[in-house]
Length: 325
Image 1 (cartoon, rainbow, N blue to C red):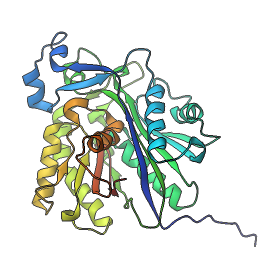
Image 2 (cartoon, helix red, strand yellow; image 1 turned 120 degrees about the vertical axis):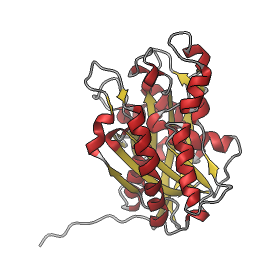
Image 3 (cartoon, rainbow, N blue to C red; image 1 turned 30 degrees about the vertical axis):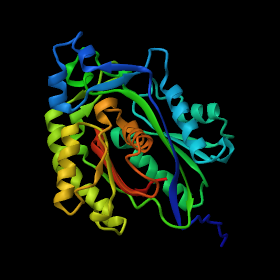
């Protein structure tokens, strides 16, 4: 019988570098109040957002993705030629063909790297991180660039109060590479497709629609167990987690999940990401954006144990424990 050669990779993987990008235009709650029936107090009370960033009409999703990816490669101490695969998590490309990843790889100077997009909406970055880790551990690629990027303003009705107050634009990236010790834990992921109608773009001519209260109830009851499962799969106790970085969907959701984690043994001094206050909900970009911003602000340190969990349209969810670069 003809035998085939199987590749093998390193014992573990880790995040080697981070990078992020946000557009220059800051849109405050007061700015939004000029175009719709809302106020700063109303928005802060319901979702916890003060500001968000909007890309200009001629600033493409791919432009933001390239900027974040270049920073992550540099932060990892690598060159574009060291990257063997580019994965872009996004749900807001203006068209599905061509994909973002191939364009990003070319513009970054990655030589003929494997390139593909992944759409798990707000869970996209965690899905991408898990996929990248498995690619490296299998020996398929040595270094993988994972970018979560969204230009949600292309898909949001600017006068729909239920969505326009929430979403923002941006990109966040991570480089995943080999490690002697595991620095990215096993993923806890899944989906609840029976609820897929809660968040959707009904057709190519429509804006994003979501059932806000239904999503809130689902997230505040179902996501904490997923986060705890990720901790269990990583082989640690929840008390050993230093940083909690959930998808930045809604400040009330974030605080509700953190409260449930503390009730299960998470420390009172657990650092909780609240990047949503000044970035809004950036879907698949929100977790890497928050990580990069927290690092820049000195809120987290290299070596910290972080629990990441993404959740959103699909309904899809994923979480993993990582050690910060």
